[in-house]
Length: 387
Image 1 (cartoon, rainbow, N blue to C red):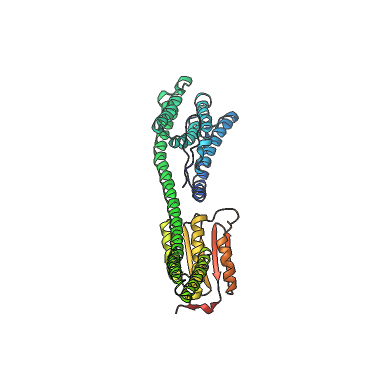
Image 2 (cartoon, rainbow, N blue to C red):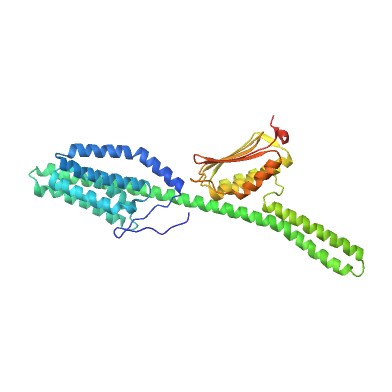
């Protein structure tokens, strides 16, 4: 994954996770579905139980709202934009709860916002964690200065319990941060593998081009040298050499065009194995189902469709799974991780569509619900079902 400059706040500075859109969306959906409802419900209980007046309820609700905003942005990997204001607001609510409202539950918002923000600091995370726990405990202890409550019970309710819970949750959030770092590293590794797979495909193309033109040019050079020697001694032989050169160059031009438009003869079994290796190298799970065998001519066309689709998946998708099915009606390639928005313009498949149609078949390209399907359907005269 390409690294981008870290977006910074004046104080403190927060690091931003770097995930692909698909990974970020999945993680956000999981967090919002599993953690946001109980978090919101717990906050509402805190507001209801900790409020003696409407003013207390409003202030505690503001703290809850700030905590939920911090959680939503944290789930999206973008808490840096709201971390500082959310921490300041929830800290103010905690001070209000201790000195005015007289409720030890007012630290709930700071517990959430603070423990989400501090582990994302680019540096001085431990100092930030200690400072947060100390702030919660010291502010809570200030209750002893404005209240006639029993010393031990007030100390436990406003200082020991809030400070202890903050310390425990903070300790749990640091491994959580490391988990997301590992996920980001895996995502970057997957992207690098996909890029390497595309580079290998390009190198294979360059090798095929070299095989076509390198050999031909070498032969042409030798034949021209021979024709030059024969032109004055054996004109007929020299003309024959020139005719062969002309035919060889014409054949090379044809082969080069076929290679450029993915029309060179391919072996379907080799293409299936190559696609499987490329996907696995890119960290993509692949399943190949061969329900039928095809003749050589049909296999060449299906191999071209498979090769072009493989390259498109590696270049344009963020796939985690690919399924390739060779059936009696042709070949179908389905991958997840299709990017949102209109499908990209795939010129290689556009060119192949005409060839498939010329053989009486049909090339289908569909994008739906994050999945991309490429299917080449051909007349079944060229397909023999496995018995």
